[in-house]
Image 1 (cartoon, rainbow, N blue to C red):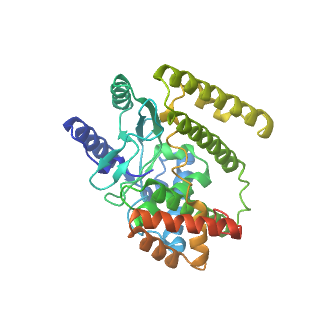
Image 2 (cartoon, helix red, strand yellow; image 1 turned 135 degrees about the vertical axis):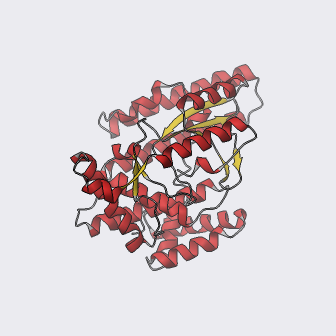
Image 3 (cartoon, rainbow, N blue to C red; image 1 turned 90 degrees about the horizontal axis):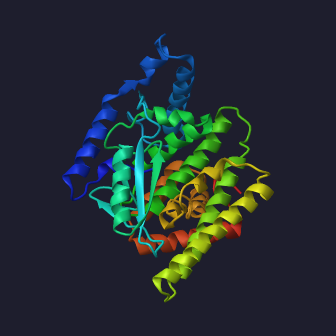
Length: 349
């Protein structure tokens, strides 16, 4: 997740909560090297921090990712999420109400360090008629403007997720295109997945059984299908009351499709049930598809670079400097190439 703390807005209050939240986070940092040798550090915490140390070193020595102070420190936030992102759409649209920041560019959310502040903003947007979703996020990147620490909220993940997230966020620090979320996140997600595969090989671990990733991909595909259905619906010239009724029917159908997927293909695996405990609306669908649209294209680009990280990053940097229309056309062509060649999102056939 890119850095919500880099932007600004027209209100002093929003700037103030960003500044206060970032200061509190930076003030909580402690060097990991010191914590792992401190006898007072709990054994479970020491084990996770040692893993983060090894992954951080691997990121620079093997993946050509930035060698800096990021992820060499630890911060205990004493809360379940690092930030809460507020997504919004108009009532009859699947397009995000974008927020534009001086450095990060335009993104599909606004970030808050306080859950109460995020929920207050959500209520404000709801009063003006928008569909709204508040999503807790375990980590974020300041794109290298500060030395981002390993956060206590990241330690709930398993070892692969922790290492992969370090690779992902460092990839954002290396290359970032303001205002192009799909490019940025697909690129960083490719680095995460491919880097994690190489990390496991280097650690002498067997290939990952990616059932969790398969389920995540299938769930995202379900959300994207629903979003496409809604987009077609909203293009119809219908009265508002009729649109609302049909919109509700689409979300009922989404739940039914999910239950069939859960009960048939997933054999009752129910970890995604929580998604349906909240009201369904356009905004709840926004995060899906932002992280993987161009994954096959980046896999093809990596293959063209001879599976060489410096050459790959040089090619990505060249693409990042193009106009968005040119960049999108190139990514579409690369994605088509990947489909023809059978290249996987982790960079191997």
